[in-house]
Image (cartoon, rainbow, N blue to C red; front, top):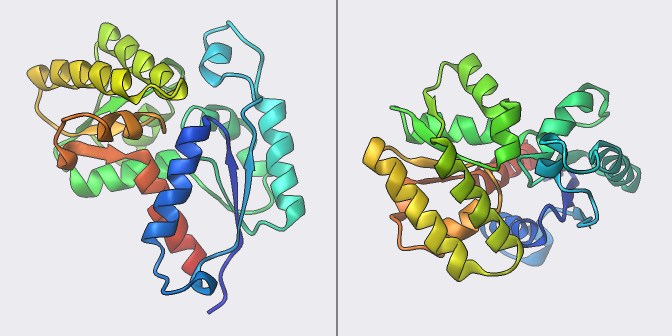
Length: 229
């Protein structure tokens, strides 16, 4: 069976990208090495921080993201994936110019949420993703009920993201637990971990597995479907 070559732009952050590759390899229907797809991974942690740019405190990462996507296409990628939700705020500006299909993490994640959490879900994300509104816009288009945390809880989520980026899963899990429990006191529905660091924080916590809708899992599953199509 012929398979598409997947190009992955990672490094935003490195731990989330590594986890994406782990999920992809374990979920792909393969019995031996040769059954797995060819994947070109470009991990570029030097891309400026996406949320800092959105809130006006950092350099625009769009030129860096464009350049790296172009490089993946030059290498021969037939399909693209970017395991960073906030990066898609910038990718959306030029996605129509990309010459190969891109598996869009927001679309993949909300499709999974609609299937698994029919009554709606909370959105746990970076401050940047929430501010730009890419999840809210897609959810509205789908007619899906997406709840945004109160502002103080959003900053707790951002703190958990920073701990994951620093390699401190213990504190990331503690902060995320506090934030999740605050949300569930308002309404007890699943949480979309709509920043690719947050699935790592969730999994390191004591929170129930079944109430997490992981953007990393959703992206990996969508990539597998596209590779095999």
